[in-house]
Length: 154
Image (tube, rainbow, N blue to C red; front, side, top):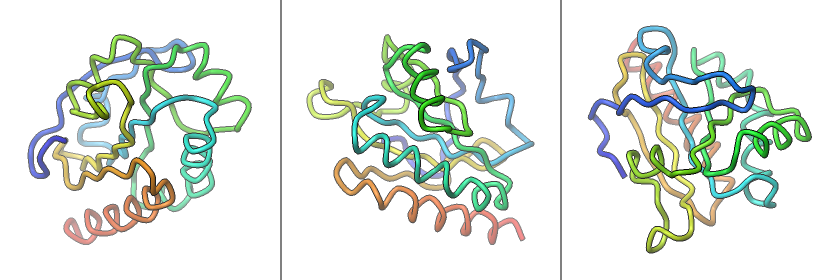
């Protein structure tokens, strides 16, 4: 995983709606919860995405957005987002370029990892964590990290 306190690498990728997502578009504007997950429609990934959806108001109170990334296609992301009424962008990374840049590969690079980065408005990684099996910890760790970012800027 990338080190906390370093600048988050900029990237662009195809979003579920066909638009181009650029991390740099949020610099100076929003904190970003960038989470990497293995696969659309799997039980764990569905639970994680729905947890982020259900706590979107709390995330927004921290002046933050959630962005999900997996190696699935934009078509898969679009269906996944629609079926579960997700309210944040999903970025397709079929060539795993973003996944590699953010060191979010799993075991031997074969099984995708479940990694989350909290990136502040200046583009600095403030917190990173990996919970491949403890899916529920992603949300609680995310909210705690957003609290810390908010308190540091208060």
